[in-house]
Length: 379
Ligand SMILES: CC(=O)SCCNC(=O)CCNC(=O)[C@H](O)C(C)(C)COP(=O)(O)OP(=O)(O)OC[C@H]1O[C@@H](n2cnc3c(N)ncnc32)[C@H](O)[C@@H]1OP(=O)(O)O
Ligand SMILES: O=C([O-])CC(=O)C(=O)O
Picture 1 (tube, rainbow, N blue to C red):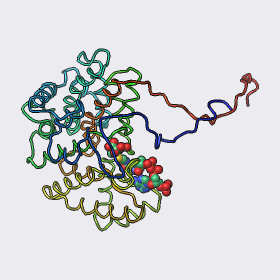
Picture 2: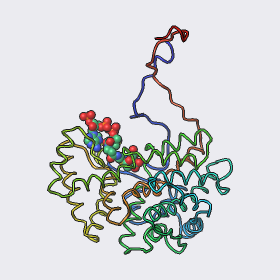
Picture 3: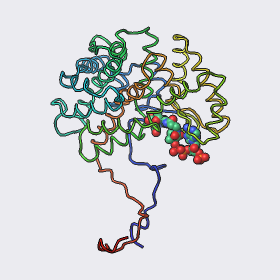
């Protein structure tokens, strides 16, 4: 028996422990999630996204001075270079914003601020620049596609306030911004999910931060991962009314279709973040008159659990939250990406701090060895 006969494939790497991490702990049995030991619901209730990005980057929550220096650096880096702004304006009008920001991050990798060999330290330095610049690029894509002028960032505003300012030209009520900021915290990190794993694989070859994040954005885009928050809203719109929800779902399940925003590779009995995000959904539904979306969502959720024992994931309540706040549907996954930037950067730095090339094996199931026939002998 040869070595390779012992290789048995684990489809989707299900159940495979790829490495150690100190960044976050997903505990499906307890239905809990901790960033650096802190329960995520507590972070969402008590901290700003900037504080959470800091703890993900550095391992400890910042004190006042540390937070103000971190925020100052983030606020000072929000502007895009005139060259990048020009490139962004030339993207096809039909481009999906996820493709646009994937290209923006790839472009940033060629700018002087991102040059040089990557180390854990340089990844955190440059990661702060990405945290600052990517929201600016996302906001610009919505405005350009709406035929509006791009709005420059304001350094006197928090990251969440400034995002609303850049997308809409105004900052909404404090409770709306708090819900948005909380949603960014819930989205900020989730262990070795597909996009984070992609970033770690890329950086493990001694590539660079922007390359790793470009790959992560590409992985996040798919409907089985981050793309689901957009798919959820399109599904709710297709259903249209609470009266149709149950029949719609039964038909889809009978046709063996996947229902977007439900199921999870790790959480089998519910996603730890859904309760907090559902509270944001109820809050913004009251503020903006969107009770219909809550009603449809609740019917789908109850039916999915009773018919299939499959629970909603974070993308399920997130879709209507962003919709009610006024964001275009194709901005939802880019918002997930700007939030996840903190986690991705922390993972790139962690991988670099104790790197080993990621290179799994394959179970070969192709033809047995054979000789190459001359072209004239082939059918
Ligand atoms: C923030 C995030 O990225 S969370 C994930 C967001 N993605 C989605 O919401 C997309 C919809 N969900 C899914 O496609 C899946 O649940 C995944 C990809 C997230 C996880 O999938 P896996 O761990 O591979 O589970 P798998 O696809 O094997 O499903 C197991 C069973 O549950 C069923 N199932 C899982 N999710 C769903 C769903 N959303 N709708 C209907 N059935 C489902 C499968 O059909 C399968 O049934 P079967 O055993 O009868 O064939
Ligand atoms: O962990 C996963 O597989 C997907 C997920 O919920 C996330 O990335 O937030």
